[in-house]
Image 1 (cartoon, rainbow, N blue to C red):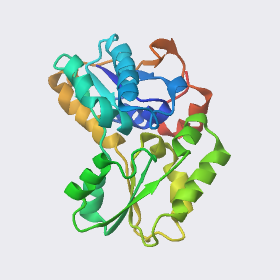
Image 2: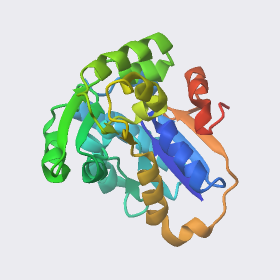
Image 3: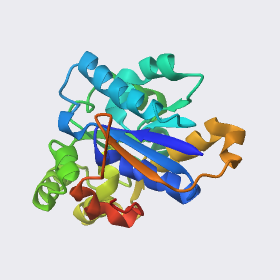
Image 4: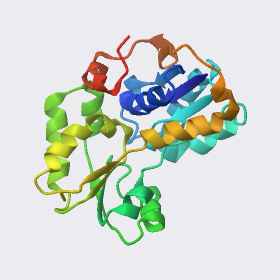
Length: 254
């Protein structure tokens, strides 16, 4: 079995690690374009073109499914990617985990990029799935880029800034950018003093990994060999050195 995962940069590591956990034998193709980051400030057309480039590069490796491990790409380009690649390759998008968080938490904070925060897309999700929860949108300027570069000082500063704007007593934090899932431990420490003792985090990696296997269906019985192929703008590469910071996720830098 071969599964492709795409994102602007190393935010795809969380979904890739979740897939590894479910199917250690799966052959993974990680397709990104880190030189084009950040995607958030770019136009919808530019984001669509960048996402399509990563998707097409991954599709050339004939995966059994493609996981779009990027909220921004899912918002702007998911329909286009599905129109081009399905039904031959199932395409699984990423949606912020507002629904499960609001179902079990009273006070929810959605940490997301400035471009996503306050967007019609996110506001629609809050209206549809927020339920009775008190939901606060928290923009996290600079955090995705800091995570991408493994810049500890910048990560600490960006997380501290967002933590200061997270309401006291928050008992659920939705990680609305896949990059943020790589630094959940840093976020947890930053909000510990003011968050509820029952604080829970909600990412998307586990859900999209499980959905990818469901979409593959019977083909999931076919064993892979656990290989890892890394593509940057369609060219074979290795994971950037910054990925070593997140080695606890279970993907070694090759």
